[in-house]
Image (cartoon, rainbow, N blue to C red; front, side, top):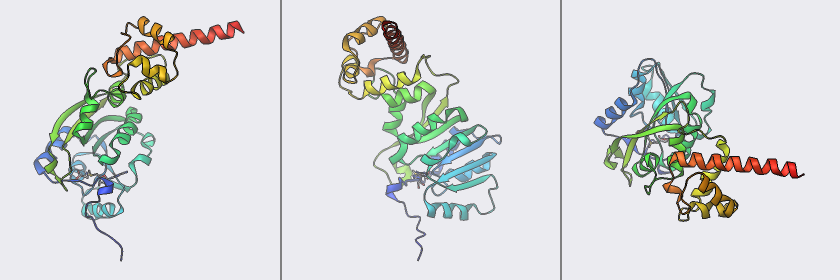
Length: 278
Ligand code: SAM
């Protein structure tokens, strides 16, 4: 016999929202109007989905679990013409092929929260705003400012392209089954332009990844371990007005920008000199 069970599956991060008051607060935060197209990630049993479908022009709900996909379709019946449910892994979904702009609403499965955030940031030009429920600890890392222990690559990855704010805290007992941690609702609004201008964005991300891969070390030592020459780096930090013993989590976005621009100039100068020498 086919398994049609909709009992929560731990490996798919299934913790279903059951608190009606919190559900209506999340819907309020999403601020959906009749002109909006909405993509919902992981609709589950539809705690948010049917409210969204009542408010939006269109809702596309992406659910990986076949049984929940069937259950949701049965529940929706003919009552929600604005709603389309697809059975798919959100990490494989081609957001870039959607033609018009859309909003994202998601109570995301915790086991893939970070890859989902990265995927959405890549699709940011198509997204008006995102209302996303995450583990509180992860939400804190995303909104963290420099000089704070939570500040890291995830904070920079989101804040470079968008403005994230924590809108609501959700206690763990608002879910069934009750997870081990509390959650928070984040609103992420993509910026028109990145938070700082950098000449070479690829180098910017390469430097940031190298810097944060040795968290306890100074910026200078982390970048030296990634293969940059230490004396060259010292000159670059001095030119950018950055202290030599600073740690990666203490740099502001502007300082990252300056550092990478100095490094870009230096590398270009080196390249030019090499070709002249030849
Ligand atoms: N939105 C519902 C709610 O608030 O009650 C369910 C949220 S539950 C935390 C996460 C949902 O994401 C589950 O329905 C799960 O099956 C689904 N899911 C897990 N991995 C997924 C993936 N890779 N792609 C799409 N949906 C996924």
